[in-house]
Length: 279
Ligand SMILES: [Zn+2]
Image (tube, rainbow, N blue to C red; front, side, top):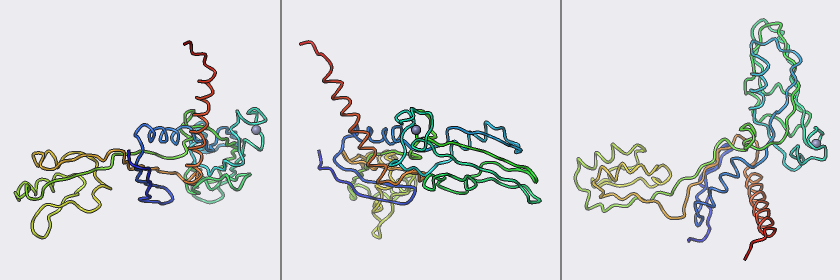
């Protein structure tokens, strides 16, 4: 296997793309599944509706509130079941958010996530413009909500990322001299869904330099060239993509993933040691 190597391909607030070399597909999938289901984040879990003049039912508003991504601080808060209060609700496992809006204008009014006032300035919606509900003039909405840490394996609202996926690193090769038929080359260029082929100045077929970033390994070029083009994937090299909704920074997320992974391995070893295996 290749030595482990990581390269950042793309990094923005909401997307991280890495090229990972020297890792097995099983190991990469373990990391993917931990990111997807085991990293705790904050989400609204309890809602008290004191007044609701809006056209939406209380249950719909509660559901919408639950799905608002909240910035999460993993240093301060405990999972309710691991908290000293045993999940009853205390400042170490719960954040309260309130929303009180009266429409004093002469038109309808939108209530957004930014109207939620948190008692911890670190635990706030990642975006202030997520619509919650619309109210008519003179109408009023008063809501009290409680956010707690949770795991996405219990409910998707606690998912730490929007999506996480990996794909094989494509490796396309062909002999230019075997591809001289202009009609065939045209067909290959036209049929590639990602438009990764082009004609060089001397008329021969060539691949765009960064084709591997976009190739989906659909094999269209292989089929349309009677297998003169070979589509393979590099062994133990993957393109790993994390799409974030901004609840956790990437460094916090990745550190937590390995913490959870180590805990699981320790737990497994302890269980194994306790097993009395008959010889
Ligand atoms: Zn507590």
